[in-house]
Amino acid sequence: MIIVHGVFPLKAETREEALELMRKMAFRCRAEQGCISYEFYVGLSDPNTLLLFQEWESAEALQDHFETEHIEEFLRVIPEVLDGEVATRRYVVRVDNNAPESSELDSEPQSEPQYQQREKIIH
Image (cartoon, rainbow, N blue to C red):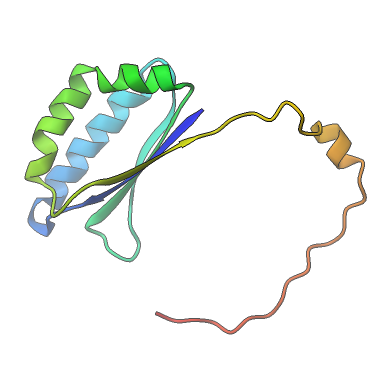
C-alpha cells in the first residue's frame, strides 16, 4: 500500500474556490481503480491549510492516478489558489509475513493501559 500526505497552503481570498476544486478532485480520485481512500482535511491551527491523505493499493495504481485527465487539470489550476508551495510525502507500507498472527497476539495476557497525568500545554 502507498500512502501520500500533502499540505496545501491556500490564499484566504480563494479558499472557497479551492475547497470546491478539492471536493471534485477527491470525488473523482475515489472512483479510480486502486484508490483505497482520498480525502482533504482543513487544518485546525490554520483554516487556510488543507491536508491531503491518499491511500493506494500499489505504486502502479498511484502512477495510473498521475496519468489521469483530472489530475492534469487539477495540477494546471491549483497554483491559482495556493499561497506557497505544496509539500508532499509518500510512504510505502509493506506486510511483514513473519509477524505473529493476531490470534497469537490475543493469547498473551492483556493489562490495563497505564496513563500518567501530565501538565496541559496551551499554545
